[in-house]
Length: 126
Image (cartoon, rainbow, N blue to C red; front, side):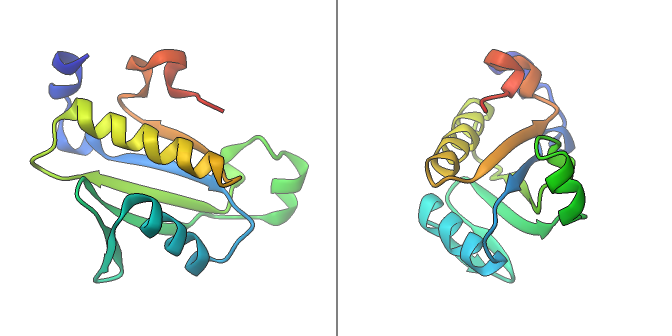
């Protein structure tokens, strides 16, 4: 897996995580800061392995109710950019760890990235 992942361009290493969370952006930010042991740096969340932007997705509550499993209708989107000194194997492990911690907090999420098809279950852990 390292060989395949290390051949990806920097753009391909970026990761989106769609979140279905019925909490405020501020509360979500606090949860992610706690889970990643990060800090806020110029409106971005910075931790030892990445920089994370929390964006509000083009959220339509009616569509979310109508089709709750369509992640494109979920409320938030994390844009995760790995630290330059991190191996791709470690980066993937950290993204998966964050995913499972969010799930343990009751936040539905799905990882969308160029590299997820190299993971077990094609990166679908829901």
